[in-house]
Structure formats: structure tokens, C-alpha cells
Length: 498
Image (cartoon, rainbow, N blue to C red; front, side, top):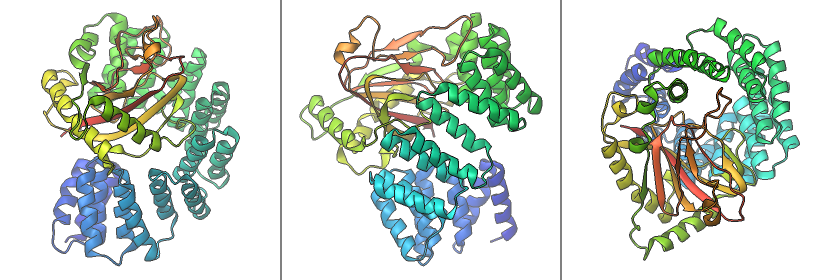
């Protein structure tokens, strides 16, 4: 094995050149004497490419080849947890701990595994241990604060936890953005905006902070401040996709959709599959009546609904859905929604449901395979940004469940890591769905931020137990709030072509 080649693969990995890193690491890992670092590097590349089953196979080889290595068991445990296989992950992690693992990263993995298994008390304790060893680690701090918020709904406790990384000497940008997101989630939008505006004033060259401040100001209706901030970021990196996206949003808010479309299309030349740019390009095209909107948001052909077949071993679909609802209720152990997700007035599971050993959940993923393949076949191939990625095959990239309370809803959003996204309805608020306002319905086409003129939803889907909705991940979608005392529980997942 060439150490120089391995170093090259690691350098490419660190630069984000994952396809190039993969070519090297794959060849090096295939050698019979591939060492621990080579296998770990190859696994990390695969994980960043969302090829988790392949990464797992590499980690299993490493643990078998180097059984006395705590790091090998750590890596295996982390991958198993990413796949939602909590029990196997805990077993692997315990093997690593027995071999002496005691670093903050390992305690962080242990905390995530315990969250997957629903042991939130021990998860908090593991995060405390992780943060005691690395108090300035932003990821550990934000994950811990999120757990505190979801368990207790106490903003003061959650923000106190968030502040510890800043006081321990962490770079301030990321913790400040996370703290502002926490404020927004807790309904304290003005506090979020004030915090971010002050942060942008102190950190004028921190592009994520400046863009977060611009968007927060726009949300509060402070357009002049939002534009000034976005333009200051544009000076720093005029071709960056996130800045072009923000400028498109600003132009739409100012009633300049032609300029918004120009910015979005400029970004798509460099990042043709960027779901945010596609979503805003569609919004701008709609505002100027450009035919691109009909291409990107062909609701008749790109959005489909499917009522699943009754899984084997259940006498009826109703019986299966009752079991599925009971299974999901056991997983919904949080009081509040995550601070950085679109759910409002409800809760969301965090573990990847695809890795569950529960036969009810395994039956679900078997049941949705035929509808997904039918959707892709109906979609076909074409020159547009969505259809040209259609290979006829797919991989699920994350699956979770959402339970909404009365008054709950999903903010309009898109899924940045998906190609096709979904909503499967387990329980629905029947009385609310019959309301003239379409309470509880899935809506499409309404952007999440201010536009001039305002753009209303352009398409709706009525939920029904056992019904699966599939649609492009870049489409703005949200839930019309409902106000009846009825349950609404769903499963969502993203898929990508393979």
C-alpha cells in the first residue's frame, strides 16, 4: 500500500472531493493487508456519499481484522447507529469501551445510540461526559441542547446548555446560529433576529452568520436590513450557491422575480442538483410566468399518491395501520420538536427507521417499494433537473416519523439531501380534513418566506391512512394547520437514485 496514495485520499476527503477520494480509497481498501486507517478512510468516504450499507461492510471487516482496536468498534458502532440499528450499535460500542474508549467522540456516539434506543436519561449522562471532555465541541453541545429542549421544552435550560460551548472558547458563529434556531423554534423570533443581527455586526466576514441574519431579518419583515446583509455576503463570495440562493430570496421579497430567477439559474450552472436553488428557481419562474415553473413543478406527473397493499401477516390494512401506529407511538418519546426541523406543534423521531428490527416497520419498507418503483416508472426520464436523475432504482436516505398535536403543522420547506421525498399517513384528523380550509392537508408551492406578490399554495393532497405521497424533494411543501382534537401521525423518507 502506498502511504502517499492514502494521504492523497485523505486530503481529497477533507476538501470534499468525495468521488476522487473514493476511487483511491476503494482500491487501497481492497488490498488484503489494508490497515486500520485505510479501511476507516474508505468507510468515511462511503458514509459521506450516503452509501451506508457499503460503509458498514468495511467497518465490519475492520472490526474483524483488528478486534483489539477500540477505534474499529467505535467506527462500527457509529455506522450502525446511522443506519438506525441501535441494539447492534450499543453492543459494538460496549466492546470499544471495554477496550478503553473514553474520548469525547466515543461518548458522543454512545449518547446518539442511547437516544436511538429511547434511553434519554442515559443519553443525557453520556452527553455530559462527552462535553466534560470537550466543552468547546459545538456538535456535542448543540445535540445535547436539542435533547434537553425536546425532552423538557425548557428554553432557558436548552440555551444555557448551548452557551457552554461559546464560553469554553468555541468559534462563535455556529453556536450563535444554533441558538437563534432554538429561539425560533420556541416562538421567540424577535430574540433570534436581534441575536443574529448583533452577531453579523461582530462577525461581518462569517458568511453563514451573515446569511442567517439576513434571512432572520427578512422573516421579521426588515427587508432593508436583510438586503444589506445579503449584499455584504455577496461581496465576499459572489458565486457561492448559498449566497446566490439568498440573493434570489431577497429579489423575490422586493418584487424583482426576474432578478431572482437570474440568480437561481446562475447558481444551478455550478450546482445543477442543488434542491434549494431548484426550489427558488421554480418560485421565481412562477412569479414571472416563465415555462420553467411548469417544467419543475409538473404536479400532475411529479406528485403521485398510492394506497399501499396490506402487508403479509396482517388480515387487513386497518389492522396493520393500527399496529404501525402503536409501534410509532412507542418511539415518540419527546415532548417538543427538534430545534432545527420544520415541525411545529408536535414531535419527530430522530433515529433512522430503516434500520429497525421491528417486523411492523420492516413490513412498511417492503410495502412502499412497489409504489416508489411505480412512481419512478411513471415519472420517466427527461431533460429536466428531476427526471434526468431517474435511473429506475433507488436507495432510502433517512426515514422518520412525525406526530402533530392540534394546531400543529409543518412549515413550508424542502429536503436538501433528497431526490424524491414522501409523506405516508398512519393516522389523520378526519374531521379537520373535511374543513373548507383543508386543515391537515399537504400543500405544495407556497414559499416559506415573503414574496412580492405573495404566492399561495398551488397544489394540495388530502391525507388518508395508508396513503403514500411522493414528490420532488425541491418542491416547497408544508401542512395546513389543523385545530381538531384528533391524531395526525406520518412517516417520511427521502430517496436518491442509484
